[in-house]
Length: 123
Image 1 (tube, rainbow, N blue to C red):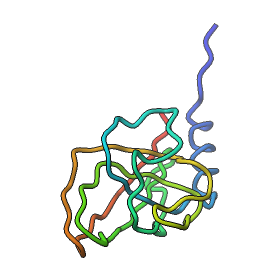
Image 2 (image 1 turned 90 degrees about the horizontal axis):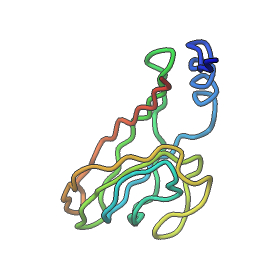
Image 3 (image 1 turned 90 degrees about the vertical axis):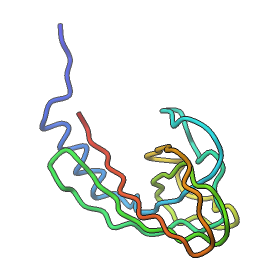
Image 4 (image 1 turned 180 degrees about the vertical axis):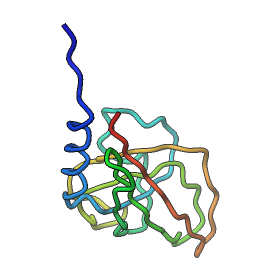
């Protein structure tokens, strides 16, 4: 017996994600590897989460695009999608991470920016 998530099922999940209010992107510092059980960034940076532009480029993919500006010198190593802006320094609040990604550290100075494109594809 086989059980599969059909293409229509994948598209339905993406449609539901695309209609949710998960539109905030935050970034962090620190070391680690993004994992399914993550509930927070490695070390959330002090900048507020920003509102992302959400789109659905294909039927089974949700995309968030957001730009964050550094408030000081730091090395950014991870970013994620949340359902709330969060508050405080580092920002907290809202549902834990929905999508989390890690990458080789990007050193920044105050005023430097990173534009993130975060894709979630159900396959």
